[in-house]
Length: 148
Length: 67
Image (cartoon, each protein chain N blue to C red):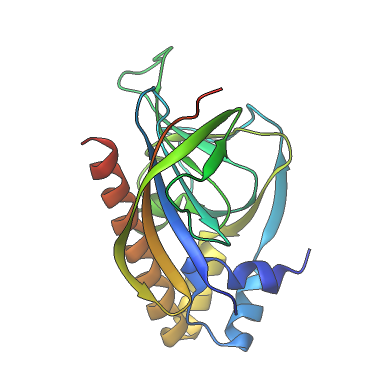
């Protein structure tokens, strides 16, 4: 997989210069999941950011502890990010995310690595944080449309 | 770089929660879209927000495709 080519198609990294993309790529850890495998669990501590590169994940929200029928909020496909809320606010995971299809591939970026990169390059930090805000806004717009 | 279409798919007519995904071509009314193991027909496409760079932001409404 040409990781730089993949990252270029991810809105989170839109506007980064080639060298900046290479710096981001150096932080990425690829992991592949089978259908039904849990990637993050609601309520747990977690501080990594995930980028879906192939396949789909589903975002599940439990209303109560030990909820046996969590509600599926959205499916996320290629180019989408999750885990960004905990990355930004340091809170617990807001939802459970699990792979929907076999071979779902994600790139994982650890918060400490990401924060260090942003601290070393304020322009990169600004661009990525702006894009992250735009992505959160897009998700809210999607939610509003889904609730019509 | 080729345009990238970030699409908010909302499904009417069943309990599918909707999908957000990047695609290489913009959806058009009448297209058949496959989400999971089901096929859907695109019934509406609107620009959700203005394009930025190569990224275009669309909303597509889907209905279960007739067999």
